[in-house]
Amino acid sequence: MKTLFDLREKHDGELIEAIQKLYQEPLKVVPMGEPPITPCIGCWNCWLKTPGNCVMKDSMAESYSDYMNSDTVIVLMDTAQGFLNHQGKAFLDRTIPHFLPYIEIVDGECHHAARYPSYPDLIFYFDTIDLTKQEEQVLEDYLYRTAYHFQSKAYRIEMDNGLHLRPLPPRKAKRQTIAFESVGPMEKLVIYNGSPRRSGSNSALILRNVTESLGEKVEIRDLKERDKWEEWAAAFQEEEHVLFFMPLYVHAMPSHVMAFMEKLQASKGSISFFVQSGFPESSQSHYLEAYFEQLALRLGRIYLGTAIKGGMEGMQMRPPGGQAKIMEPLVKAIVALVFDGRFNPKDIHRLARPVRMGLLMKTIFRILAKFGLVNYFWDQQLKENQAFERRFEQPYVK
Ligand SMILES: Cc1cc2nc3c(=O)[nH]c(=O)nc-3n(C[C@H](O)[C@H](O)[C@H](O)COP(=O)(O)O)c2cc1C
Image (cartoon, rainbow, N blue to C red; front, side, top):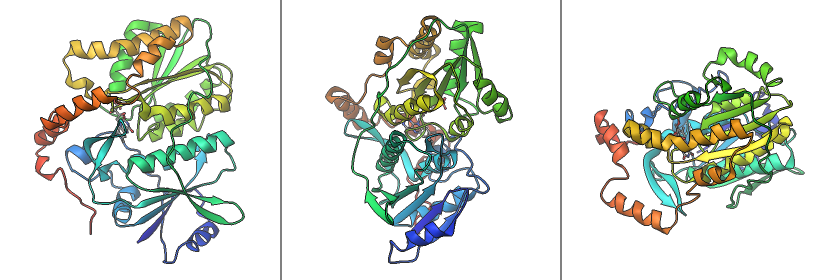
């Protein structure tokens, strides 16, 4: 079966007819997006309580069976603010139940192990009309990487004297194309917390420590408060220094962060980003860093840089002293940003280590895996939830 998920706001039939001609068999067309796909909230029930099943009941949950029973999945998406829009992002975030929480190392990077024996080819289509060449490249690199992580072959449908299907060859993100800039010491820094978690959020914990260190020099705003978005997006025009702090979701921002970013307009002042993620290696976040450079250019703001810290998921399992030690360098980087008007390059470099896993880390990982210590974090929670026996469940295989 071949399924086409149409996430675009305007479902024009012409494009779908043209795509149909690329294939010998009829495509199953699934219009999505109205009502919108519910954003992932990072609850991890799909891994730890109801393995393979998402708690949300919406069009995305209804689409899981089609996704898993197709050899080809075509995704038509809209772009916004130089990237895929929040609907496209929600679609990718909500694909996580099809994988296991368990980790494998591939080329020095962590991957989630497969829940199913095979995955469909992923074919992406997006209109390039509102994108610069660099933004198009950043988005294509991101989609390639996501398909790779989802154990799918990646293709793009492009319009160039008719429609063409182009395989996306392996590549790495083209990051650090613009240098970190600096401004003077900041009177005040507005920090947006981009974690969708309602409880147990690492970002919230870290930002609480930032407030303790910086007091009134920072104002933390939680992007879960959607009713304030219009007011905040308008204030962005006037605010001198703004930092977006978020967890990494499928190599990019959580979808509600994208939805907010779509509202921002070009304005004066600085912009900076802080991404913290579950896997230890910072290379996981390079695709997002590449986008944030483009976003800063698009918004015409001074780009102070993107700080990246991996290995944060297990933080809350540690005793308070251990947690404080992990958080300290992150807090220090933000304190320096406020007092010096720039990220300290040495601190940022140190935070981002390891970029990928070297031989030593891979060997340690293999030894820990042999004694069941790598998966201990997940197994423990599965057992507490009486879900351990069901951990490999494949609910969508017909
Ligand atoms: C849907 C989803 C996707 C994620 N994708 C990644 C990823 O691609 N790479 C990574 O290292 N961590 C990933 N993570 C892990 C989070 O970045 C990590 O758990 C983070 O510390 C959560 O922060 P928070 O508690 O503030 O939300 C993902 C988590 C979720 C829920």
